[in-house]
Each structure stands twice: as C-alpha cells, then as structure tokens.
Length: 389
Image (cartoon, rainbow, N blue to C red; front, top):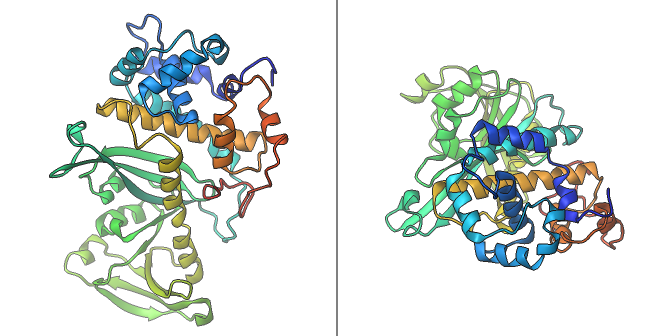
C-alpha cells in the first residue's frame, strides 16, 4: 500500500470504480449532477457506516473537520448535508444494491474453502427476516400496525461464509414466507428455515427446483409414517421416518414423500421435529444443519449493533434502502479485506480499529500487525466470526 494514502482511500481501493460506474450508468445516476456525484455520495455514506455517524449534520461536521484530507480520501470536495440528503432522496437505490451484489460475488469465493465438518456437497443457506421499527409519523409508507411502522429485511446468507447472498427490503406487513416466491433455488443446495416458512406449496417448488430444505415442523402437522429408519439414540436423534402429508390441503400442495426427523437436545432440554426432502444424509446431519441456522440470527444481531441500519438519515423509502444497501456494501467490503489481508481479528475488532484510523496515512496492515490483539477466530479461520466482540 502507498503510505501517502489515507486508510480510507486504501479501503476504497478494494472497490472497483469501473464496476461502480457501470451501476451508475445503468440507472443514469449522475444525470443533472454538477458536483456531488454518486461516488461522492457512496463515499460519504460509507464513511458514516465506518465511523458510526448518527445524522447528516454529524457527517457534515466530521468531514469538514478533515476538509484538508478529503481530496486524499477520494471525495471531490466538501460534503454538505443538504446535498447528501437530496442525493439519498432522489438517486435510485438500485445503484447501490447492484454494486453490493458485485461485492458479494467477489467475497463468496474467498470463503469457498471453509469446512463446516459436514459431509455435504451442496452449499448451505439460511433464510430468515428481521424487523426494524420505525416511527410511523416520519415513515408513513412503512405502516406495520395501527400505531407502529416497520420494515423487514428478508435475508438469505451463505452459512460457511456468513455472506448475505439475497436481501429484499419490504414494509413490515409482508409475510416472511412470501420471499420464497422471489428466490431461485440453487440445485443441490440446502435451504434451512424456521417454521415461519412452512408453506408446502412453496416447499414443493423448492423440491421441484432440485434443491433441498430443512425446516422445523409445526405441532399440528398431519403426517402419516410409511416406515422408520434405524438410528443411534445416543446421538440425540429420536426418530427418522419417511411418510407423506395427510392434511386435506397439504397433501395436495406437497404430494410426494417427506422425511421427518425428531431430535432431542440435552443442552436446551427441548425436542425438535424437522422436515426435509433429502433422504440421503444422516438424521444427525439434518439436526446439525438446522443448528447452523442460528448464524443468520447472529448476522442480524451484528448488523443492527454495528451498522447504521436502525437510525436513518432520510425518511423516504429510497433513502432508507440506499442507506441499508451501502451498509451491506461496507459489511462485505470488510469481509473481503479480512480475507485478502489475512486478518485474524473479528469483524467487530476490524471495524473498531478502522473507525479510529480512517484519516491516518499508514498501510492498513500496520494497524493490525502493531496491535496486541490475540487471534479471535472461532471455528474455521476462513469463516467470518461475527459474534466475537
């Protein structure tokens, strides 16, 4: 790295300016722009994410304090809160969504050699949604309940990397399971879900797409056992059955055989019943797959705590989506840097160090090599360790 560049400029070097320009051109983002371009907007919002800014005024004041270094950070000039507010309101949020997806495509192969300890060939994904509360008087388009506003982040992450591969942002009333209509399942992959996604017509569509699912069953499931498989109860597995649905509607919505696995967890003293359309993996693997679903809960917890996606700089749906997608871009950018620089620190630690060093002129690696932090990697060193704080 060039020691004459600020840390912030070095971070942005990991981004493809050409790819960003293609995203801007796709939606004519710089039309009527005189000075404050889409790239300037992205840099200002990325700065806000990296340094935990609370408002547009906060962003403006902090950047003005460093105005002599703005050029060396890639910004074309001072950032005014009115210009940033107008850009967030008017420039198509899809520019930043498309750019985030290009970063996701770069990050995923970097974590491709992670071993979860499961004898599986297909990629494992976890699907879930999280709700972000909003003030209904300020965000009237996000009506959730009578006197409450909210949006939902429907997200699918790749388990072995903790990288989000699908995100859909809707108002709070949209049911979680409806997002299955937007997904194109990857043949041979495993989709792990909680029972809120138990819609047998949609699960049958996943089955016909040659993908596998693992999902918790509801207590009132109407299921007829055809035969049981031998098992070792010392592993916690209590039953492994093949059968079919007998409900008046469910039998028509899912007309083929289904596998039901019952597992008892001594740690939580709870019994779990799982459904899957995969008949080749062991019943303990089915239970283990569902256990990995917890990583998406950790992902939601992490981004809510460490990214600016709960307090927004604008009130329009375009501004909210712009801020979320740029936040996702920053998350994936740090994931790329972590792998390419071979950093052992957790994502939280990396962000904390960077947030205090953005305007320093020293190589990024020196920020971590000179630190006394011990390696915080939990499990595989190739996986993003979100929960270490």
